[in-house]
Image (cartoon, rainbow, N blue to C red; front, top):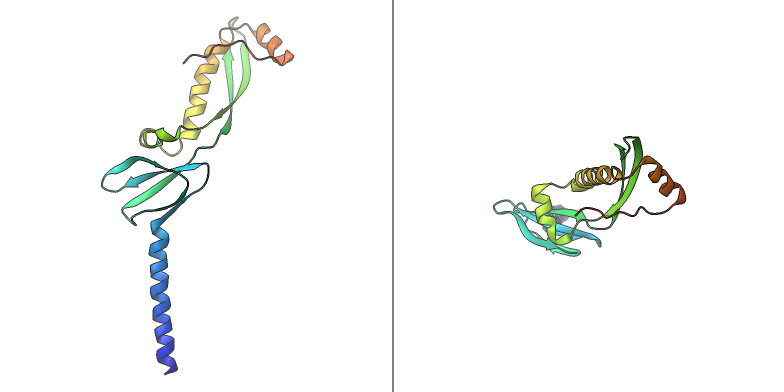
Length: 155
């Protein structure tokens, strides 16, 4: 009698563990400040961006890619030339965040590591073009006085 009861409890426990595993793989939790893009095996990346909360996914068929949409800092060091052909070693700190509605396009064209590839490359180009407009003496004067540079960034 006790052996049958333990056998029943063992089978019930195993079935409960399998059901819990299936339910766990079907849920996607998106934290505040993050967004998710859903990838389907047969259709590719969906154009819908999923906000914070717990969402249901079809196991094996759908997979979520979670992106951090909070503002993030990035320091970009650049060695470039000024207007009077002096070498300038400058570091620019930018604060960036991806546009949540563009995450499916960002994921398909750039990938999940967009934050490591895009800001440094864009910042490098823009910083070189801006520094080339000024002479080295003007740059030093502005930086020592703690003033911001009178710049109009290209769009």
